[in-house]
Length: 451
Ligand SMILES: Nc1ncnc2c1ncn2[C@@H]1O[C@H](COP(=O)(O)OP(=O)(O)OP(=O)(O)O)[C@@H](O)[C@H]1O
Ligand SMILES: [Mg+2]
Image 1 (cartoon, helix red, strand yellow):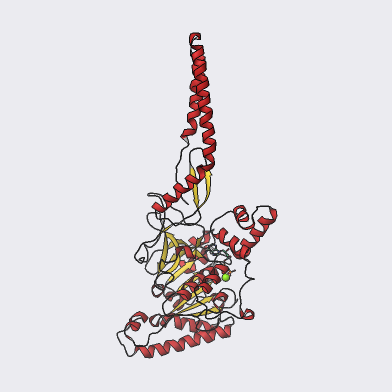
Image 2 (image 1 turned 90 degrees about the vertical axis):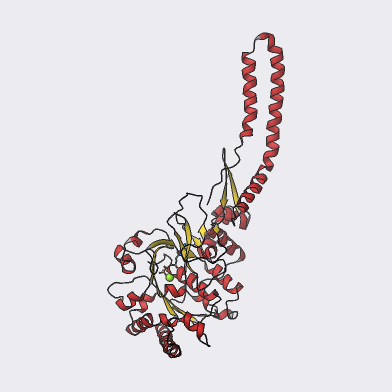
């Protein structure tokens, strides 16, 4: 959001000044000039009325000129933004931008200093309460070298996208109390792997069969999504087998230390594998599963197999220290208590979080930073997966597992406008043509379900 101060309607004061002058003249001029003064007064009054009339007529068109002028200003500043409402005050006209403004460099962004959200010079920005994933995606689209984790503030108080190569994040732990954004974040990460142009595979475990269901037909899926402990363990066992196989392949190239260097010299390239587990803390209670995850966490990095583990109640007492030491990236959303916050972060800060999606993140080699993780709604996600051809084939209706009924066109539009920052009554006007009680209820219900 940014305010431009423009268009002081000073000219509106001119008729008032004329009027005042006439009145003063009429009051102070001696009698012998009364005649002349009266005539002058009539001329002035007529002139003033003409000016006022002119203002009224032009006023109707004024908004168009203001909008055109602001568009030029936006273009001049290379902003991708649309003007959605003009607020006229006494001396200012304020445009409200529909979404965050992102300055993108021409060259691929280096990890920490990538896309800057627009601040005025010297202006300190605060973290936004909601950031849409598509708005902070790398210019060249999702890719494994620029996995977007959210938006943070740099030393100058400027908001910037936080991105890093998946191979540098290595194993990622995502913590957070119920309802503060774990599944949304895991989905955002899976989405980026699913759409990445590089060779990559997704191994998804989701005991509640909710988080990853949009990816059920992804052409990057290595196994069907596991929603039972048995299936989950089968995946882990198969990945350990893959690890052994890769170890054999690597033997031919003794200097190779990573999947990237292996793929540079080997004839047969191997895909990166992202293992993502939602509610993993529940699974870690199973000793066999815990042992397999530990083995993968300890040994899989060299072979390009990375784990992203989401969980509500990471417990210092039960989190195996071997696993904990391998979790190079930690993202803690709202924690239930200071003690809970310390388990992943060694810091109590996450207990005070009050915004869904807000988190503290520790990336390899970097100090803890506050970030706003990206948001993507289920309809947006499904649409993007279908539009980009990231689905292997259309799902037979009976097999399509999604959390809820797909939205109607109007519901999807309402949710989209809400995500773009519009108010409920504005959305009702745009989508349903009115903002009466019924229309407002329809909008609220669409937002609740699909935004
Ligand atoms: N990054 C985000 N930005 C803004 N709002 C968010 C974000 N992530 C989640 N939310 C809001 O929080 C709600 C709950 O998110 P989510 O389902 O990811 O929580 P969760 O931590 O997985 O909860 P549970 O433990 O119950 O599964 C979402 O429906 C959304 O309204
Ligand atoms: Mg969840």
